[in-house]
Length: 554
Ligand code: ATP
Ligand code: MG
Image (cartoon, rainbow, N blue to C red):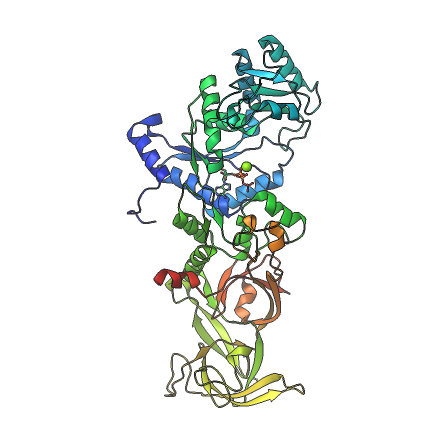
């Protein structure tokens, strides 16, 4: 993050507030996920924003679970959300739950009733919808709007006590049935739901609506800058109305545009469908745009943070190119990932002039971009594997890799020359017979031979088999959420391709789940959690090709 970067509109607001001494210059934000799914790339942007602002202005950021809707919330989601935020590198000042405020929120509702600002309504959902009116058409009062304060207090207590079934009654704020903002036409603030809550169990059978819980929760925590996405802009007058009527701490709401990324879905509800209907293996499937999916795919946390920082905040929605995210992933991995050799589509090379049974140890740099990365040992012997497409039988002029009569350098090792191509009965190449030049060893080459091509390889004697999961985009269209038909119509049938015949260098046997590598010339890969000593499994994180960087240079 460069210091010269101009302030975004939220930073401008905050700096103005600090300068004016609002709340004594205190900055307190919160990240308020509803624990009804796993966090995705859009949430990452909100996390970086809220925690980032608190860091920048030496304030605090709460993690508040917005768990007021018991039908969809689960403890599994709470745990995953905490793990994801920590993985992203942020620490919350306080871990809080809106459900801890249920008693307080109930008392707030009683206060409104006592002030004549809320009433119990027996109307059905349809009747209330009819009463609502429309834009430019005033609503009509509910017949229950004029209930006495004492009757309302009694009925609301009975709602809490469980006297009525779901849907029999609601509590509504008494605001203005002809208000130009439809959200202020006597909104529902409490509904009856005889549902078990993941934290409060069966203590409650009435639950507050989002609008009645969110602002008051902010206020209880004395949040100074409550940042949410643009669709809540029309809720802001209601947010302010409750705080004002209750005379509680004046938190303020600010809106920014939701983030969406091309080829990705950023809706928990839709992601849940992908999981439940088996289109992916789970919330952390490496193709998922969830934080846990990206983590399993091998995206470094620093890359996700860099991405969120790069796209910044906006007041208007737009689709961010997934190439920007992949650019950040490559940039981080280029610094942090050790280089190793893996042959994804192997063909055997036999060095006919290399003594059988002999083996030598070669030392290679792990990462020339990072001095601290150190070196590792690799073995070299008579039989090796190279990529099938690094050899061509009838090579065109500019083919600088291996072909009959041509020479190529094996990375970190020797120059070899191909003399003979061995095929099976159906004409498939099974072996390449080559000779190596004994004086051409990397680092001490006295052979005087010039070759243009350098290719990777592994020693057949020590190479390890690995399963490699190659990924393509999960959707075939840029904006699946807004594409024609159902978003699932656009799932890419080839989003994962299994490679079970890869040969990788033996040093990778020690690699742990989550560890990230650059397979030289092939891309970035990481060890999957399915990996075992007997069966190594890697995920392709991202290819080496960087179309976005090229775009930027144009
Ligand atoms: P979804 O539609 O995926 O369920 P949500 O908004 O309902 O998302 P919440 O758990 O309520 O999910 O979100 C927690 C916070 O993250 C909110 O402050 C919300 O505004 C923010 N957020 C959610 N999605 C995005 C997004 N795509 N871009 C930026 N912020 C987001
Ligand atoms: Mg939500």
